[in-house]
Length: 77
Image 1 (cartoon, rainbow, N blue to C red):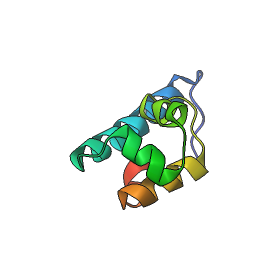
Image 2 (cartoon, rainbow, N blue to C red; image 1 turned 60 degrees about the vertical axis):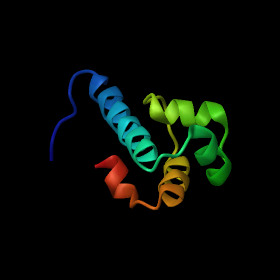
Image 3 (cartoon, helix red, strand yellow; image 1 turned 90 degrees about the horizontal axis):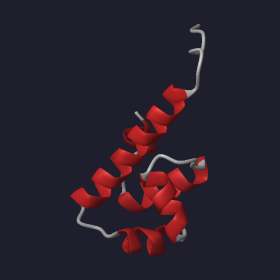
């Protein structure tokens, strides 16, 4: 078992990395944010929050992974 670091900056770094992977996969598939928004039934602010590493819900990530047809583990690795 590992101890948590003294501050929470690592959490922001991990969220940012997840957001980067979501955006990279979306762009790799040549999809617009609008296409993902409509297919995943999420709003514009939500996709912005995910891709910029803000707070994100597991259910939102599951929807996006499904729409992008990639395992969730690929986005959160």
